[in-house]
Image 1: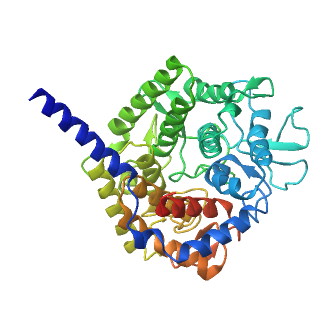
Image 2 (image 1 turned 180 degrees about the horizontal axis):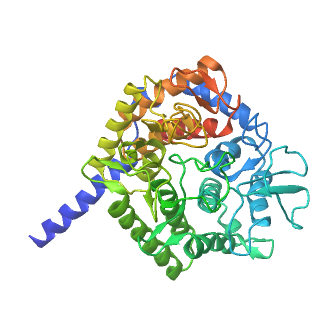
Image 3 (image 1 turned 135 degrees about the horizontal axis):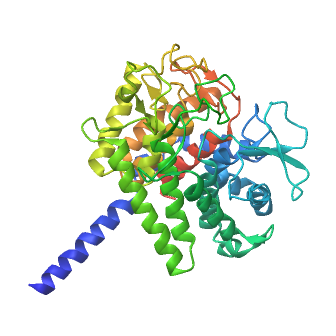
Length: 422
């Protein structure tokens, strides 16, 4: 009996492994649209590293989502040079800037940061968001995973090894961005994964009016980064530390941010008070991007993934949108979002493939191939129709924002590669 029990355990483990590594059925792996979209994506990636035609900056939250695409078209040295430049601007406390731009090439009124280590650039940091450090960790992990260049982690860059720089990134979050009461990462109030707070018109810097909170996006990004740190660690103690922290943040995210009854995330858990009126039912809002990233981080269970997809499809239908990429539904009304981000515009209910396609990644990761293909399909059609990758779209599909957006190209490239089984 004991032998049979062992065999059964091994068989179940093999079955579970097969579920996670299985490929999509043949028709879903060979969709004719993949080649055209991938060709367009590679062409765009071959032209530079800035976020898009409307942006001169190389932003880490964007670069994290198209670095694998860049590795297909750009020299390895340039891919690493962009990663290293973020280390040149790393703060003494370990913080990472949002992006950098050639000196005096930006007319955006940021409070620019300068570094003697990279005098040809100036950088800026959006202080309301807490995803810069985690984005850099994830980007480095993707580079190492795809290139196989593990030696890069031990390469000395600006006085420390790459891995040591990444440890400082994580220490910054643990020392400066953690709430001890909930054991969660904190940031200012924004719409879902967005980087604009509602309290003032130029809403990218913390100030006396900011409302600090814990949200599912920042914590899911942290879990993803912790998992990457465990994968990149060479010392057992390091690996165990990152794994333990990942489990703790996952547990706390589920405990304080997951609404079990309604099978959805709470948009924000405020440390003191909310910037919105007391009678505004914010917890009724569904946050699409946060949910997709949380699934990728392994925070949700299988039935919760199915429930999340059902929510997204319902939001798409109610918003009369082309894809599941609707940032939030319902959007924040004009009268409560003081930044004047109108409903169904930009991060307040705009349709973003940049995050919609990450749900495709999540579904593919868990072997939900037909569902992944179904939600990916209109995103492919939209790119082919426009022959370009736009930053975001109105629900009816009208292109908005940057006319070429490398973030969208990157996430679609990754989605296609996952569907193909690569």
